[in-house]
Image 1: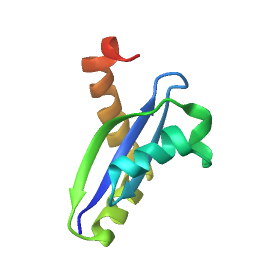
Image 2: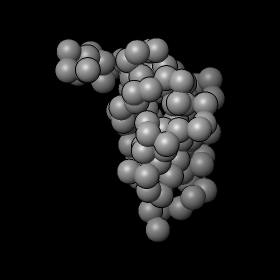
Image 3: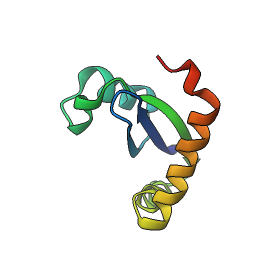
Amino acid sequence: MEFLVYILYSKNSNRNYTGYTTNLVERFKSHNIYGKDSTRLYRPWIVIHVEFFESKEEALKREKYYKSGRGSLKKNEIIHNYLARWAHTLP
């Protein structure tokens, strides 16, 4: 089984969300369509970054990194680079 860590971005609220999953399509739907979690308030979300891992432990470690002080700097860099390149195409 493959695990992945993803970063979502909401242009409307200028917020981001980091998580991990084994099924990005279903998880993305849960954030944008089904949403009963904390992300429902900031729809719509777009996926701006994905990393793949062979184990759940590796994915959880990377997710925790992005939520840490140093990792949030890297995550903000990823978001900045994405917006610099693609902001003109966002709905």
